[in-house]
Amino acid sequence: MKALAWKELREAFGITAIALAVYMMLVASLMGARVFDWFPGMPNGTREVPFLGREFILVFTIVTVLFAVALGFRQSAWESTRGTYLFLLHRPVRRDAIFLLKLAMGVGVFVLCASIPVLLYGAWAAKPGHHASPFEWSMTEAAWEIILETPLLYLGAFLSGLRPGRWFGTRLLPLIATATIVVLVDMIPWWWSLGFPLTLVMYGLLAANICFVARVRDYA
Image (tube, rainbow, N blue to C red):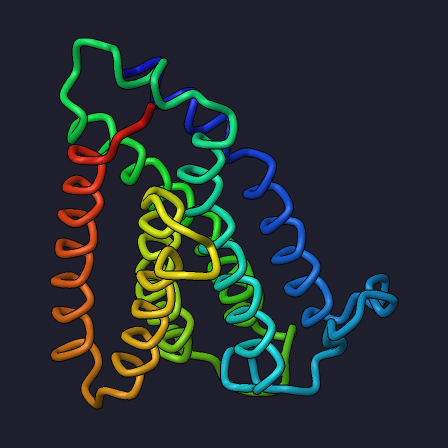
């Protein structure tokens, strides 16, 4: 299991490094660095209030969604194309344990990577003299909601990559369904009281569905 955990970390490194680089570009640009003006859609300057302006949330959401979906497919569909499932699953370990470990590593890497720009930007905004507006850590709430909701897209992409079927048929239904759920959950008022518990329930349902498909799928 330890070897499998390191394997998942190595294989997620490329996508994670790209996402972290874009996150750092976003944070550096919002801190006033103008070295990334050439990057399309990248905001620049310190005009907006940290975390409350449209530019940060928009770019952060796009990068986070793409990161989650790419990582989910990388850990599932990529295994099929390389033919490594048979090698992994002949080990004397339950399939549920193997796939739950893959999911745990994927969600852990995702949350850690997506949290870094929020913490860095927040630490910069909290230091006096960096920005003209006042700052409270409660202003980062929207960013944390995005970080906690988007793993649903990761799980949906993982399930879509794991399921057999045609890519332009039913195979993408889990990802489409989870994307719809994420949009609806994000619209729920009192998110920490209602939306977050619902998100945790969806985590469990998707993980259980992934384990079921992993047990019954024919990998030959």
